[in-house]
Amino acid sequence: MFLAYNSADERIVETVAAGLQRRGLNPWFAKWCLPPGRQFQREIERVFYSVKSVVIFIGEGGVGPWEDLEIRAAIQMFVKRQAPVIPVMLPGVKQKVDLPLFLGDFGMVSFENGTDDVSALDRLEWGITSVQPRRMTTI
Image (cartoon, rainbow, N blue to C red):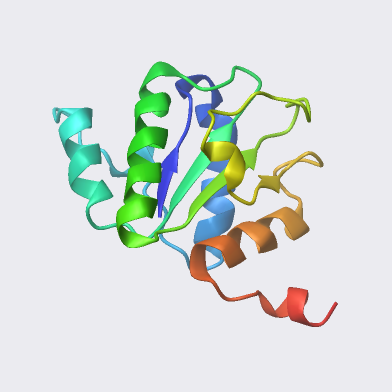
């Protein structure tokens, strides 16, 4: 899955990415996956053709200019391939945040209780894999 985020939120998104890795998932997180000396736009474009889902993080700073383009590409990918697009609210985001028009139609995950919120990580994993984590099926 591709992780789209405002660079101002990189540190907190990295925490969520690490949580996904601990669950055996392989997130495409720019800080970990973008080789030095490469044009990030070209690398992101290449990756978009192979990912099966896109996670869009919304932090206190809102959507950044490059993230806005990634959101538009993700929605286009959803239309063409039915690939999940998962908006994620990071801690500190007010509930009434204005999302880009079409992004608001997708089911959301909220980390309002912090990035160590197991329930939010479970929902995010479910959105990415389409399989409910075992904890969720026993509740």
